[in-house]
Image 1 (cartoon, rainbow, N blue to C red):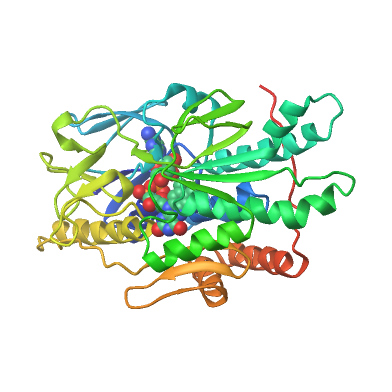
Image 2: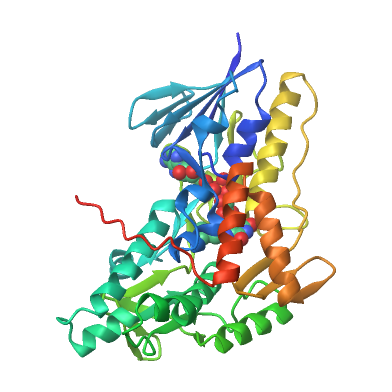
Length: 415
Ligand SMILES: Cc1cc2nc3c(=O)[nH]c(=O)nc-3n(C[C@H](O)[C@H](O)[C@H](O)COP(=O)(O)OP(=O)(O)OC[C@H]3O[C@@H](n4cnc5c(N)ncnc54)[C@H](O)[C@@H]3O)c2cc1C
């Protein structure tokens, strides 16, 4: 009888393990609560109305149309029953021989429920669309006659919390929107009071990158008019005012939280397997204490000689853990010794705006025009389908030459 593999989550890790398990000797069920794979590095372009959500989202059923051994289920996994080899979802239950957990992370508000209630976050395609709708709608409210001066400033202040790549990229995109788009969309309105704030708890923007990139990113942002405040925390936010650790209060109805993530753990496994809100795994991604349950990607915590505190939560780690685990499952079935995983750091990068990006490669660091083209080329290569690559290329080329896009739809949903 064929062995049955269940994969929970079709992000970078889950998608790549499933793709590499397209073989006749296994039955694979990919369960995800979304019906599509999401390309998270370009969420900020959806949030700032530069790309359509469909450009960076890929329906699983389309991806696996021709894979006879892979079934897709749109379900939310609620619990794992390791003693019965079963997972329980909102729709029912599935049994497995091998279970792979690839559930990634969600936004971490560090227990601050007021911030969680009022802030926007960007961990799914829906949330990126929500940011786009929210900001565009607030511009419309701003020009309406019924708004007080205090409310007007709240509508015009965009506060981004966390100056990692997400915060930096969003800040640059909104600064460009202020310079190039708003004067054309609202020719009768003065948007000079629109402020983009970027707040960061550490001393630097892009704190995990090289000194050169930290300095260059800050300079680019400030040149573009972004107000950068480092060593600054938001202590509370009520939807109208953000209070900072130095006592300063910023009036804003647009606060986007990009300050941390926490693992999407599922009930049912021993708490001793959880470390730093991730599942502790061995070098083959097997969860410590279990024989047939694996975790890969952001949700996995693996200590190695090169990374004694676990790997960084990056797409490349997730993709390669997925590929290695697929090889190991096949090796296991043919009684071969499994391979150990190690991450090879290929570098990191972030884009701040047109002709402004920073790239840290293992042996060379550079910024500016060349870095910006390099960033675009690499992201285009990473996008899944040729059709999506072409759509994105077309949108970027259009934006490049016109400094504009025509994607600023406000899509309101009624409950
Ligand atoms: C805005 C943003 C920008 C980023 N930019 C970069 C970048 O430039 N470079 C880079 O290397 N990394 C970047 N990252 C990080 C990168 O996206 C992650 O490291 C990567 O997505 C991890 O892959 P994963 O498969 O572990 O998890 P994910 O890609 O998060 O996938 C998890 C999947 O599991 C599903 N899921 C979760 N819980 C359940 C459940 N209970 N039941 C069913 N399904 C479930 C989710 O729907 C999702 O499809 C960025 C992340 C964000 C949020």
